Length: 189
Image (cartoon, rainbow, N blue to C red; front, side):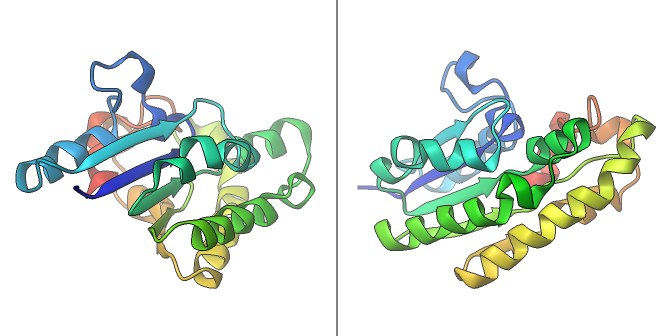
C-alpha cells in the first residue's frame, strides 16, 4: 500500500478537477502528483478542493473529503473566499469563525488521522489593482492560519509573500486570485 495525500481547499486547489481525466485538476495538485509519481508510482493523490469554499465548507466536508480517505498527508489551502466575504459584506473573519474552524479542522485531523499536515497561507495579487485593498485581510487570515498550524504542529507555508515577491503578476495570475500554470508551479515547489 502506497502513501495517500489529500489536498483540501477552495477553487485554487480545485483547479477544475471535476472536469479533468484523472480528477486532479489543472493546478498545483496535478503538478505535485506528476512529479511525485515519477519516483513513487504507487502514491495516491486526491484533489478534494471545492470552488467557492470557505473554511466552514472545509469543516463541513472534512469527514467525507478527507478523514474517511485515511490520508498520510493532508494539504490545506483556504482563506481567499473568507476574505471575499469580509470585503463584500463587512462580516469579519472573527464573525465568520475563520480561526475557530481552521483550528477545529486541524484538531480533528490530529485526533482522527496519523497524517502529516501542511497548511498553506491564502494569497491575493494587487493585479487588478482593486485587490490591493484585500491584502491586509489576506495577511490577517494568513496569520490566523499560521497560529492554528503552530498550535497543531503543522507545517506552514506563507504563499502570499512567496508569490508576491516576484512582482510578475501577468505570469502568476489569471484574475488576481487564481493561478496560471506558472503560478501553480511555484506553489507546487
